Amino acid sequence: MRAYIIRRLLLVIPLLLLISAMVFFLVRVLPGDIIDVKLTQAGWAGLDRAMVEKALGMDVSIFLQYGRWMGIAPGADGSFSGVLQGDLGVSWWKMVPVIKMVADAWPITLQLGIMGLIISQLIALPIGIYSAIRQDTWGDYIGRSFAILCISIPAFWLGTMVIVFPSIWWGHMPPIMLIPFTEDPIGNLQMFILPASVLGMALTGSTMRMTRTMMLEVLRQDYIRTAWAKGLKERVVIISHALKNALIPVVTLIGIHLPIMIGGTVIIEQIFMLPGMGRLIISATANRDYPIITGVIVVFAVVLVLINLIVDLTYAYLDPRVHYK
Amino acid sequence: MADSSSGRVAETKRHSRLVDFLIRLVREKPLGTVGGIITLLLLLTGIFADFLAPYAVNDCHMESLLAPPSARFLLGTDTVGRDILSRVIFGARVSVIVGLTATTLATIVSLIIGIVCGYIGGKLDLIVQRFVDAVMSFPSLVFLIVVIAIIGPGIWQVIVVLGLRTGIIGSRIIRGAVISLKENEYMVAAEAIGCPTWRILVRHILPNVMAPTIILFSIRVPNVILTEAALSFLGFGIPPPTPSWGGMLSGMARIHMLRAPWMVIWPGLALGSVVYGINMFGDAVRDLLDPKLRGGAGRYGMRAKKE
Image (tube, each protein chain N blue to C red):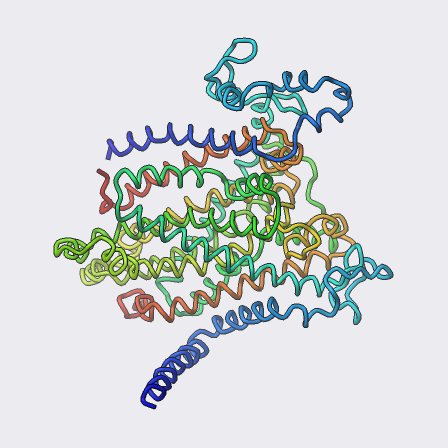
């Protein structure tokens, strides 16, 4: 088990290198030349093309650019500063360090994601388990319909509706400005609870369904019959015997859904006008601001790699039958 | 003569099994039946959109811009006077095409990667899974946005990118199922009697991963439809003049949504009910086809005693 964890941690390093290379070269293939756009901009007009390229560091080969960006090749001034040194470059439009923009945007996306995850699991697990142990009762039907409703309603539509209707009926508008948690914790949570619920909705539905299906399969296994035969209480059979095995695929499902959910923040931030990572990357894609795009994706990727690692380790904890050689 | 009669017997038999299945669906799964009807309606709407829509899809009625729902325009018009109902009907066609083709592509990709990696394991699995990891490490929408920004928006681009990504990620579930199958005694037995690898893959593993594959397929079709709508909503999906349920909620619709809420209500409602219908139908079919999930309650077939 320990060997497995160490090997898994070591594998993260080549994975992150693979990701950084994929992101860098993927983004540089974006059509539309930033230099042409830059030259039409006020303050830059009339400048020499070669000079602009030099100023943006695009006068060298793409591999050297990657090396400089990673911090494994010396920059124009001979110093090493790149991802490995914790420097994600400077935005080509706002001339602000990318790491600073990410530091401003990340907490918002993170809070949205964590709140979405917590809300969805709090709703999904109890209903999913109940649906399974009372299969084909009215409670089961209602639970399942609710789950499928959660999956079916598009988040961007529900998000739009919860803005449109309150404002038409009661003249209520969601706050435009962000309320920082440090200044007004309650106001901040109130502001996030609606977007977070809309964000977590799809995960709520899927978790509920997966929990139910897996509980049903596990409940028909022999060791559960043995547990019943021993005269154990229903609570014990369900929680300590069935649930642990039933949750294995659910954990995978959550692991698979987290990237979808974090991707979903792009839409939620756009609708609720939260200045998070999603809005950052959308505006950057439109402006061809390469350092921001690569920076944002790398940060997202690092976080998701860590999440996947945690999911895999949870797997090992949950199912002693899975062998790790 | 004998040939034709035996052919007819086989045909009636197959026919009656389908009818049998439909009768069970209607009797046992009322919600599944509703879902099936919605799915059928979506398919028919997609196919016959040209006959159903009251106006051509890009007809601009300049005399009635942003008109509220009326007898002439049942669901109202948008900022350039296009009939919302017609655009919602044509939007069904886009959803059907994207949903079916992208999911089929995804299923094939998942099965190939999942079975090969899960069964062969070892170094191949290790390397391939790192690439799967890398793809999984990009948040879905962010990845799709960046890739589509590179290759340009369009229906085929959306289908291929969406299908490949969904397929690569879904391979994890198939791989997991294959790995747990390998622990079974009959696998060891099959290997012990010298079964060739391809035979084990096709005869022992493939049938056993059909359940998760069918579940994945039925979950994916609505998911793919939703993702396409989300992409179009953000402006990275189907380009504007083509009506997509997601795209109809973006752009001018968002600016005028407080004054003309009918512009944003109907496309989303159509999308929501279609996804709901397909999910319900998929659920019911799954329950009817999989004997393992049929009947019985918590206490091994017996109801829990109420004290």
